Length: 118
Image 1 (cartoon, rainbow, N blue to C red):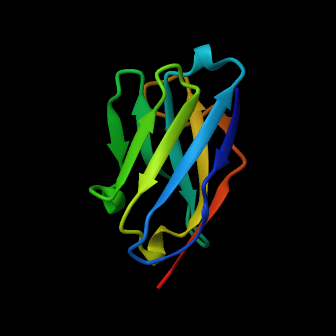
Image 2: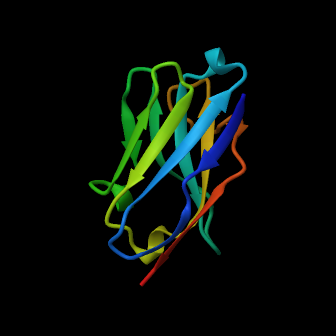
């Protein structure tokens, strides 16, 4: 499975960004996808996830501000990020896995940088 992210950039606090992840290859193996964030000095964390039943997961810090969605055929997953805060800055990685939540993803994208200025 190949994952390619896009949509990162530099925005001001309070603005929005939409990240996209295009999946190709053996997408039949995917049962869940998600977005991880790697911030300087912090461990990479799962920010949002979605599975084949469209059940979603969000880390507490983004609940009510971020929305994850997907294409039915697992060809794409998206992260709508609203009311961005400086602490949302980091490299965002798309991830995919055969389990119901990508807590230990088998597949990773290359990452896209999100920078939120105050």
